[in-house]
Image 1 (cartoon, each protein chain N blue to C red):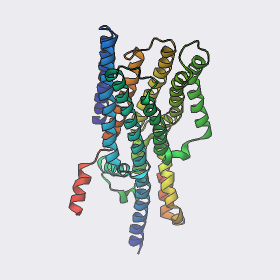
Image 2 (image 1 turned 60 degrees about the vertical axis):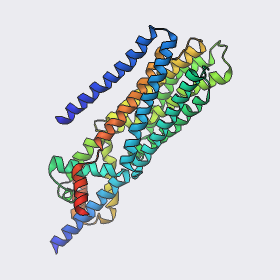
Image 3 (image 1 turned 90 degrees about the horizontal axis):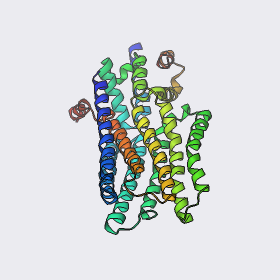
Image 4 (image 1 turned 45 degrees about the vertical axis):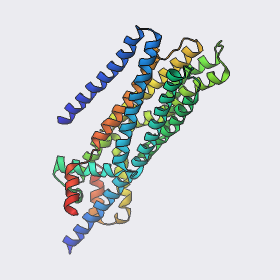
Length: 267
Length: 95
């Protein structure tokens, strides 16, 4: 009963965070593109930073022990990489007044994906026996289907953007689709388990990324993207989803006071 | 003699569970112990007599995937399968 209440409370906080971040950007839009740019850039930093802090906490809890210990270190690497990317983007835009896409920020965004994929692999490793070929094929088909709109846009556009920019824009949804496969498998594996909340939020977060990246590509090709565009809300929400997923895991696997006391008595 | 054998089997089963859970992560092991104690008032060696409690706790944490953890525990106990009480334990834990 207490667990259910805690879960409900956590979900309330999650929805509040989504509402606050979304409303902040929507409201800032009414004050013009310069204001929404500043508000969005300054929203990304604490949101991505929170994910780093939470990943540090869970990594310290697992201390490299077992497959999940390694998995959380890899997730931390993703969070750090994306935090650096967000900071670089903000510096480019607010300090140097340059267009941050494409820029060095993209290197850090892209580097985060292999780490996230490896996180999923390490997390799911103890449960591989349950992963069937059919499951992998089904998850891959779903992942490919979410890619179709982006691929269509990439190959059928009349944009003036250079080929590198178009290719880079298309890379993100492809990377999202790849990490979507283990996330879908995770949902199936941990169905009805306490850890399923993390995998649900990871999946929703990745789906936000897929839609966000597809939208980003579309509006970049259309030359109508600006920082603070509604697609940015989806990117911020994906960080919020990831953060709440990690936070839930911290709560599930928090150190038990009795275990601590027993250890002290043993010593 | 029987009492000693039983204690030994309890220790073997405990070690197999511990090794499997530590392979996933120390906090997973600690969480399982905590849940066993909190929900059923038992410690790890007592899972030998109540394998269904361990099954329930693992299912609560990992959902469908708890089956693979049980399979891993079974694998750890492979060499003791010839012993009837361990075989009984393994059948019960898988139910």
